[in-house]
Length: 255
Length: 265
Image (cartoon, rainbow over all chains, first blue to last red; front, side, top):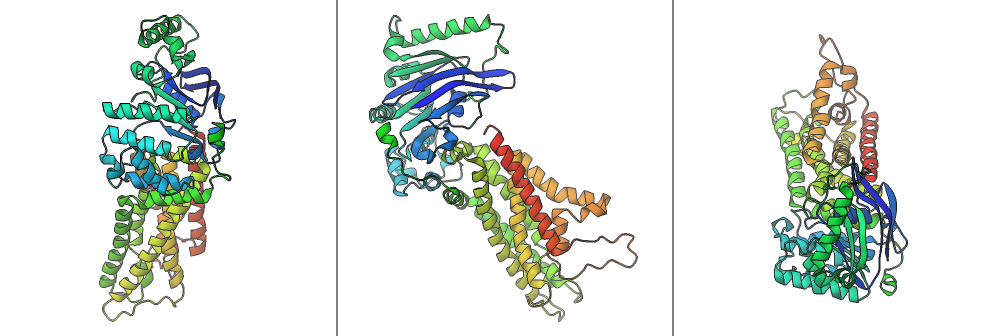
């Protein structure tokens, strides 16, 4: 279980995440929805301790990410597609990660097979297409067979077959009783993949609900999302407490 | 999740695990080996060239044979900086920290691995340069021997200086994070600055890393001043120089480590 409590992060005068609280439970794919610049990636970065919050906290099974005993065996994360050195082969990249958490070496070949990169394992990862880079990131996230998976826009750059594959993969991982948290700005994709939804706008929680609940009473999930985020934007524009009307865009550029 | 979480084995990741990761990362990049090979070849080649052209048997022949160390250290310092900054430029840092979030431990492991590799290559280059530089002496000048006073110390410390300059580069890399800027700081701070300071303020010049290596660590006899020189620098002793260099490396790593721990990655 992941508990996000009153999480707040500022970049300069921009409030990227604003007293955000939600809980992620095992056994479901939870979609993380929000417009570009709404704070999705920042929240992800705060969960895995890449950025330090100005207030609030995240607990993963009761502990801070930095206090995990075997981080890769407890949380698998993929925050951006290209999170590897371009000069290193996929196999060496994964072998280095495996060593850091005493993960058996054979697991490297297992995950390479699983994501369909076995034939490209010896090539320098810098030559990979975006789709292959995504697969390498997914392989790294799965390396420690962790009970928690965090993915930021994992379908970016994947072809239709790849999108279908990751959808099935994440659903099956959730069905095994894992926490699966996936951000996307593709509402249609979320409608197919997720059971639960966390929706944010301008760093604040707009909804913590199920896909069924959110799409009830609207023509589609997309319509429901647009209505919700639109209302949030209008509310924000009228709020004098806002320090900036510009969305937090620091880490969202690629999303 | 309870059942899955229970599968996580006992114990926790330790320094040795992180060091093993850093070793695989370092050795799996071709650029590491190219840079180290060029640094070693440069040190040896210059030692040979100086040996061939030496005419003064009374000079410090050991120091001559090690003359190529200084330019090679430039590459080692830059390689050390890149060991950190390339993680930021590639995005690898996100993955590294997701595997080993304890940042001071991460930098310590990186420093231990890179330092060990740099010292190993440095010792090999220094000994080969020493013997090659001695073997190519002409004009009937006898080659220096390791058994002569101060010679073994000079050659050994020459190799150690690879590690220390590498760690200074690593610490500066962790401090600056941007590859271009870090290379600028290493080249400027370790090479250009001493040259300028050496001209302007001789007293401070002798405490500059490169001056320490060239005139304290790798010398076997006191450097003589020309009779009509208006200034004669008092270089620090070899061991004091080694201590100073160690202090510089520790300071660079401490600053880099503190910033790494405090800043957003």
